[in-house]
Every structure is written in structure tokens, then in C-alpha cells.
Image (cartoon, rainbow, N blue to C red; front, side, top):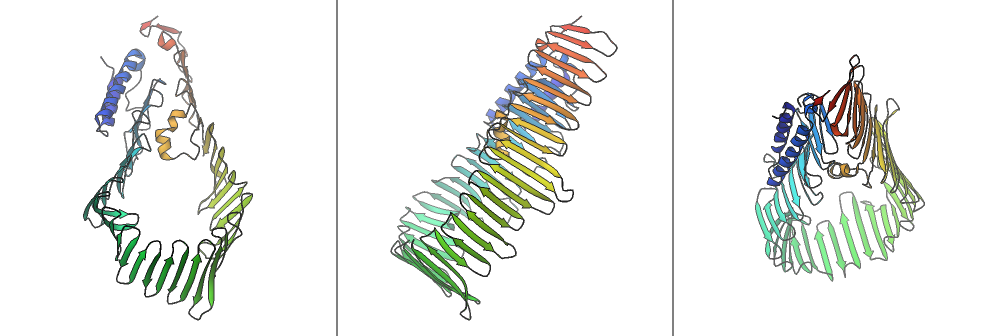
Length: 510
């Protein structure tokens, strides 16, 4: 008969299964459950000594299986980092299921405002949050907005061949590329109709409608205020009441002019030799001017709000910004040295791209980031009220990362991801290469090597030291001490005032 702890474990897996509907995922759950029950049954009476998962529990057969229940969370792992389930019993913790990692990972935050799944990320993923939902699998993409939003956009796209959905106003559309149809909310238009693309294309952007034959060669567009046409690349123009621009033999020659109630602008560009743009006020006084020579290498730009000098780009760059929201400067002597400042920010580099330092200051803290690319990265946060460091992290790629926040300290090796770890990397891949973890807080000190093959944990109540399958030693401060050798073939128990008791073959007490 199964002990009550095994029954609780089965209930935990059943709850996890409610969040996954695919037959493959359910098969994985049943497989994990079967092996977990086998291990718990093999452990015999030792498993029955632990309480139900509704209380704090730690059953450890790492790296084969570990069941840990604490602070309202049932958390268990199997086969090292491959299978992991974190199932909260309340609304204060996040949910995570990996079966196995990185083949399929499902997650949900504690508030239920953000959830999704990854399958061999980044090949397939799904996300749901307050502003909508999207799913992609290779080149298939689906998205939708919440039903109560004014924007009714939905998409079912198999890029670049099939397009089905609804636009922002809820109007349906469908297209088979390149045969014909209508597509909404693409990069170059709010709505586009094509027939035997590029033979015919019609696009809508606001009140501007543009029609093209043999796109992009012949085109004509109009709106209540704007007219445009082109025979690409020979000639094209766009004209309105206060604006006119045209090109000749694109991209060789461009010219434009525009007017507002306060200023007028004129400019031309003979690619890539020379360009000149001037801005005058209504009295004809020059307000700003931008000139470029052998674009993009030489540039001189002056205005009341900023000055720029590139001589040549990117080797020498001098820029000054005087707008209250963008006040700062830029001095680059690339690749030897450079710095750039802005409101509350500063960036410096030395021997680009190797040495960098970023600094940003907010209402409550200052953050410093130092990077020696690609090996070493340090992040440090300083509280502006106490002037003390409340967070610091180090990363030496690919060997380790370490972080300290408040009274907690964590060290992990290896660290194969070359940039700061993103949530997707932390869920799907980071546990696979984290061979060693050290954690220290006021409540505990722990070491885990090879996903728990060797582990040591010390708390205020006691300590545990184990190396699977050689030995397992547990000690309660002021209480019992237990030793188990060869996976339980031989066991010893000694109380503070009782003689040593011996157990053989898991069941025989001497």
C-alpha cells in the first residue's frame, strides 16, 4: 500500500497536469509519476517518516528525484535538471513545469497576469498577458487582443505564404502570397491588397492610399492632403501644401523643402558626396544647418538644441545636446576611448569593444555596470538614502556567476550564456549547465554539486550531508543523528540519550 506521502505526490502531479493538455505532456507526467513512486517505495520506511506535502518536506534522492515542500510551494525535480515542477499552494509563488527541459517548459506568475510555454525555445513559444496573447511555432504566428479591448486585431500567419486574421477595427482579411489577398498591420501599411505580387499592390496608411504596378517601379498615391508618384529608380516625388520632396536616379540625388508656421527647411543630397539641409525662421534668419560629406563619414550639424561633428565617423564624434530632456554630451575617439552622458546616465568605453562602464541614477538608487567583453560583467546597485550597496553580481563567462542581495549570497557554476541571463534562458537552459550551486542566507547554508549528487545543507535546526549512493548523514542540533550507507543497506540512528540503533536492508532493525 502506498504511504500518504506518495499519495500527496500523486495529487501534486495531477494538479500540474491540469495546466497541460497535450497527450505528449500527459505521457511525460505519468512516466515521471511512475518512477517517483518506485523510488519512494524503494525507500521503504524512511519515506513514511516524512509528513504530507501540505507541510514542509524534503525527500532527496538527487539527482534522480528530489521532492521539496516549503513556504506554500511543492517543488520537485527528476533526472537532474530535466524534469522540474514548482506548484504553489497559494497565490504568492510562481508556477513552473519542465517536462523535460528544454523540450517543453510551462510557467505562470503568482498573480496570473503573465503565463506561457516554451518548446525548444526559441523555436516555439507562447505568451499571455493583460494586453493580449501570441504563439509562434517556427514560421507560424498567432496573436490576439483581449475581447474587451477597442483594438480587435487577431492574426493567424504562416509566414510568408498564408495570412488570416482581423485588423484593428475587427474587419477580416485573408491572403495567399504571392497569388493575392489582403493583409493588415504589416510593417509598411495598415492594410495591403495584392494580386500576383509584385504585379499589383495597394496599401493604406491612415488616409493615404497608394497603388503600385510591378512594385516598386510604378506607383501612385493620394490622400486629401498629399499626392505622390514614382517611376523607380528614375524619378519620384511626394507633394503637399507645405511639403515637397523628390528623387532623381535613386539613390543619387534627393531634394526636399517644407514649411511650418514658424520655420522653413530646404535641403538636398547628392549621394554619397555631399548633402546640405538648412532651416530658417519666418524672418529668414538661419536657425539650424546640417552638412554631410562622403556620407556617413563627415558631418557638421548646428542648431539651438544640439551640435554634432563627425570627423570622420566613427573615429571622432563630438556631440552636445542642450534640450532639458536630453541634456548631455558625446565624445568618441573610437576605438581608444569614448564617453556619453545624458539625464541620469553615463557610458564610457576603453579599447572598444572590451572595456565598458554604464551608470544610471534613478529616484532611489544608482546602478553601475562594468563589462570586460565577453568574459567579465559586474552589476552594482547603491541605495541613495543609505549610500550602501544593496545588490551586487559578478559573472565570469563561461565559468560562474555570483550575486549578493541583502543578507543572501549565491554562487553558480557553470554559466554558459555569454550575456546577462534572460527569463527564457533561466527557464529553459540555465539549469542544464549549472553544475554547482552555493547559497547562503541567515536561515541556511547549502552546497549542491552535479544537480544534488553531492550536497550539504545547514539550517538552524540541523544539517544534512550526502553523496549518492555512498552515504547520507543527518544531524539535528541537540537531537538525533542518522547515517545511511550504500543507499540504505546499512543505517544508524543515535539520539542524545539513547544508544545507537542499526537498520539493515532498509527494513531490518537491530
